[in-house]
Amino acid sequence: MKAEYFPPKEDVILQNESPTDLYVLVSGAVNLVHYIDGNDQVVLDKATAVDTFGEFGVLYHVPQPFTVRTTELSQILRLNSTSLMNVLQANPGDAQIVMDNLLM
Image 1 (cartoon, one colour):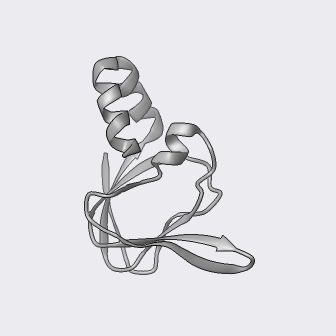
Image 2: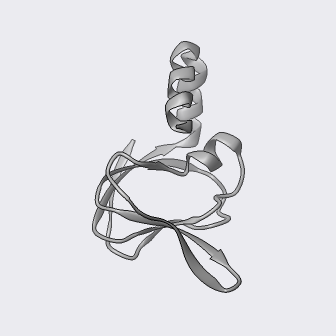
Image 3: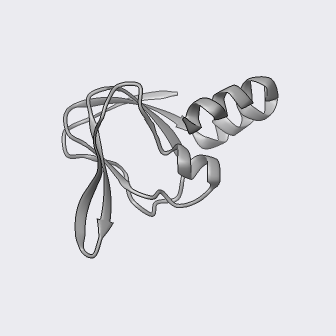
C-alpha cells in the first residue's frame, strides 16, 4: 500500500476511468460525484476515515461509476488491484472475509 496526500478539491478517481487501485481513506473527507447531463451531482456527501472506494471497479473489472473528489486535505492509502488479487488468490480462506468486508 502507498500512502498519499491529496489537497482539497482534487480528483482521486475519475468517472469512467479504468480500475487500477483500491483506496482507503485514512483521514480527511471525499465526495462521490456523478457527472450527468453536463452537471456534477454529489452521490455521497463526505465519505470519511476508513471508508473505501474504487473497490467496485477493481472487483468487477468495470469503469469507475463516479468521480471521487476530496473536500479537505486527505491521506489515502492506495492498493494496486494486481497486488490485491494476488494476495486474495494465495489466501482463499481470508479472501472471502476480505470480499465480504469490501462489499458491505
